[in-house]
Length: 301
Image (cartoon, rainbow, N blue to C red):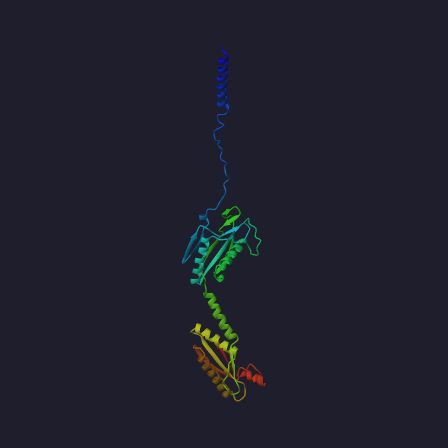
């Protein structure tokens, strides 16, 4: 075999061997590597629809999937608060302004494993109070907002954030008892420290000072409220002169006082009577005592 033939044969063997080795060891080198997917850990993320912001009462119905949030172990509302929640708060403000007797109880929640470092009895109450304070900064009236707190076993969380641990209960304030107490207290005030007018000797005229005028105003206010109220005016005298004339003088003073009250806004039924000198409050042996006995006393029956 010639040298040329041997040379060509060597080249052919080299090509064949190289092709074999390439196919055996390197054919996969040009293929893109397939990366095994990494299994991501499952994170418990709150679905907004699970804890929506809800304002639902007679005359208001507002829902949004956003809500007020708190950090774990913390009583402060996380700010900024979402626009949709603030829109709901504005609607609540308008509702409460139009319904002054309406009250809202804000209940804050905290989980049993949270730490309370506030001055409140529990973290739920503290959260409710912070929500109330936020509402007040938005223009709501604090007197229409009550707060309370509850401890629960768990709450919807995202990492260290609690999503919406607050609820709102609507109720009309019971003003009956408050109103009754107010008028009872006014009547008690009138009768405990009654309007007393003092008179000069044998005279039935008097000039009222500021304190007496205020008492007249209180009587007018009460009788305007209670149309069935009866005003009682009792006239008194000192012991100068005979008893009959003093009884008549006491009655004259009572009638003068009745006329005065009628001209000053007391439209209620007014009764008068006279005790004359029989119920002194001062010593008739002194000038000052006699002056204190010449009087009329006005109360509500």
